[in-house]
Structures are given as C-alpha cells and as structure tokens.
Length: 250
Length: 311
View 1 (cartoon, rainbow over the protein chains, first blue to last red):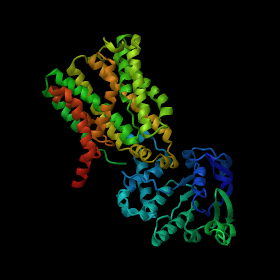
View 2 (cartoon, rainbow over the protein chains, first blue to last red; view 1 turned 45 degrees about the horizontal axis):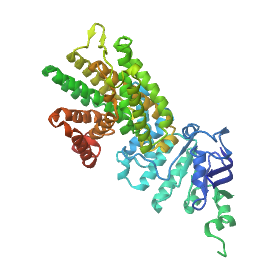
View 3 (tube, rainbow over the protein chains, first blue to last red; view 1 turned 180 degrees about the vertical axis):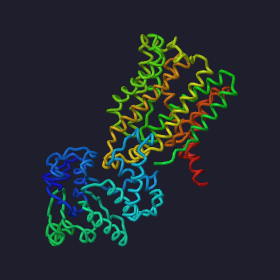
View 4 (tube, chains in turn blue, brown; view 1 turned 90 degrees about the horizontal axis):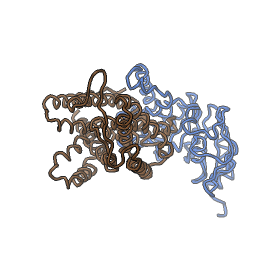
C-alpha cells in the first residue's frame, strides 16, 4: 500500500536519511523503530509531505506522493498524529474533532454560514459522537485540553485521526508518556482501528507496545535501514541489538 | 453547528436607534459614524489577528487604498459613489493577494515587520503621487453617496446609512463566527502543521482571509471618504494601524464583538479628554498596558468568561 524507495534526506550537511526503502502492506500494523536521532520522525515527515527528500520516491496506492504538499497527502488518504499532540487549547475536545472533518469534507463556506446545509452538520455531529465513544473519551468532550489527563488526550487524538477516514494512519510515538494501564487502553484502540481496515504505521520506542501490536518492524539507525522483518526476527537481529545496546566490548 | 447569538447586533441596533432619535447635534452624530468605521476596521483586524493569527500592522494602508480609490474616482472622474465601492474592494483585494503571496509565509515578528513596511510604502506613495492623490495637502471635492433617489449628504442621513450597514455587518459576522470557518481559522492559528496534515490548505486560506479583510477595510475607507469629503495621507499613517491593533486587543482578540468594544472605548478617548489632548497617547498606552496585563482576552473575553461562570 505504501512504498518507500531509496529515500535520502539532507539537512545541510547532516545525512538524516540515506537510501531507506520499505513497504507497508494493506491492512497491516507496522512499526518504525530505532534509537534517538535515527531518522524515524524525518521519515514520517517525508511521507506526509513536510520534508522534501533529495532522492527517492514515496508511492501510496500506486500514486506518487513524493513531492506532494501535506494537505494533498491527506487528501490521498493518509492521516497522522503528532508527538506533541497539536490539540487546539482554546477549543473543547468536541470542537477539536472538527479538524478531522473540515479537511475531509471541505464543506461549502456560504451554505454553512447561511445555514443551508443543516442536515449535513447534524450528521456530522452524530458522527463525532460515534467516534468520541469509539475512543472512550465522550465524558471529556466539553473540556478544554488543559483540564484533561494526558492519556485521554492521546486517545482523543486517535478519534480525531480516525474520523478523517484515512486509509493509512501514521502514529508518531503513540505510547510515549503513558502508564501501563493507559498503554493497554491505547493498544486496544489501535487494534480496533486496525480491525476497521485502516492500515497503521507507527514510530515507537516502547518494545512491549510494539510486540503486542506490530506485525512488521523496520529498524533505522543513523538514517539507514539496518533491519526489517517480524518482531521476533528483529528482536534477535544482531545489528538491532548493537544499535540499542552497543557493542559487546564497548 | 452552534446557536446564533443575535444580541450583539440587536444591542448595537438599539443603541444606534436611541442615539439617532435623541442626539440632534451633528458633531456627535459625526463622532458616532467615525467610531463605527473604526469598529469595522478593528473587527477586520480581529479576524486576522484574533482568529487566523495573522498580525498585520498595515491595515491603515488598505483603509487608505479604499478611501483614495473612491475619492479619486469621485472627485477627479466624477463617478457615481456607489460604483466606486466594488472597485475599492477589488483593488485592495488584488493588492493584498499579491502582497500576501510572499509575505504570509512569514510568521510572528517577521510578518509584523513586513506588513509594517507595506503600510509605510503605501503611506509614502500617497504623499508622493500628488498628481493622483493631491499629495500631503489632500484630496478635495469628493462627492456624496446617492442612490434610488436617496441622498446621503447630510450627517443625519449618513448616520442612518452607516448604522444600517454596521448592524448588517455585525449580523454577518455572527453568522461567520458560528459557522465552521471559526474552527478552521482557529485551527490554522494554533497549529499550521496540524491543519496541513488534516487537509487544510493553510497558505490558500490565509491568503483569501487576508485579501478579503483588505477588501472589507477598503470599503470602510470608501465610506470614510464619502463622509468626510476630504482625505489626506495623515489619516492612513502607521499611527492608525497601531490604534487598530490597540482597539482589537483591548476589546478582545478572537471575539466577534472585540473590535467594536475596543473601538468604542478608544474612539471616545480623544472626545472625552479633548481638554487633555497632549496626553492622548499616554491614556491610549495606559489602557493598552492595563488590558494586556490584567484583562487577558480583552473586555469581550472577560465578559464571555463571566457569563459562562453564571450559567
């Protein structure tokens, strides 16, 4: 479904990514792992159009999206979450859900201002109810993000991403900063999303979280792909162990 | 879809009707017209700064562009006043679109500096292009608004015209505020990258908002020109741009009534303290400082917080 081929990114003289290739199969849950600074988030930014690669190509459902702008990437069916959440502080969680809808449907400005499409907004409101419930955050819907626990915001972000009806969902460190119970809840939501037929690619540090979810793992280090395969293959891979734990004689 | 709150427009209509019926002094009616024009300009800036997060210190330039387009077309070429309004709107819209293309890619201080520079360039052009604008000594002989046999040369008549337009705009703003555009612009304001990755074309949206507000501000400029019949560059200097920022901030950024409240308060300062004219800027600055420090969200923001607490 997603085909990344020979992607290279340079930030000035820094080689952020060098010739990275991998594919994500439709319907799967895949993970991108690697130590800090390995280029995982840069890879995400390449796929979502925030960073332009100097070489290589990204294909999504047989369409080339290498140089596409972020909003065009979204239109082709890719949504993402952010490490720093990006939930608008001055609006309630429920109002924040509209971000997932406005970009998806592009409702008419004039019709909406003069309230000629009441039926559409009624349907939308019901849809928001469904997805808030889906992520289990309906109790917090009228709160502002500042008065809601971090774990709930993480779940909320899943609801907002899924309501935009993506085909591929990119999760940037979904488990970071969560306790065990919250991680399990989030893993449950990720499984539900996957069961709904949405393909998932995530960047994650938490190996336990990955082991319970990901079917396919790609490992990066210093901007290069050092291994890929199933979780068990990766866990016993010497290059991966070296990247995470250092050399034996070090 | 959120419920429409008709009260701001109704209250404004009520106050304006009361003023129109009781005040006979033409001077005070004139002050009311000018304050309404300030209020519309400040509201336009509020949409930029309070909703979309575009800081513009060049709004006086668009106000002036509108005033001069209408003024020149009326005084020099003898156009019917009404026909000059669409020209003023389109003129400012196109100029803003062209300026905005490179400038709106900047953020924060850089955007402020760029719009400030634009405002100063327009101000210099108004002064130097005296073969069109009349230069520093101003442009005279601007006609009156006249349509369908109605004549708006007298201050009373102009006050009525302005009031009707003002209440109409307030109502349209309420419709805008309660539509999804409110969310769209606030998403762009607080995170462009999140808006982008949720399919909003932030560059295009910001450009259209900037250009539309420029056009709207230019129409206010035309209304100003046909009211005072004499315009000179002084009215469109950097000082006025900064006054608009002060009005929007004191009134309440991000609230539809913010610009209006700020314009009424700051617009009355020169009238109430006419005897202390030398200290006008001091009072201005003081009010602004007090508001920023002690009344975050401005007066409209504080009112809305108080109302929510009661409910």
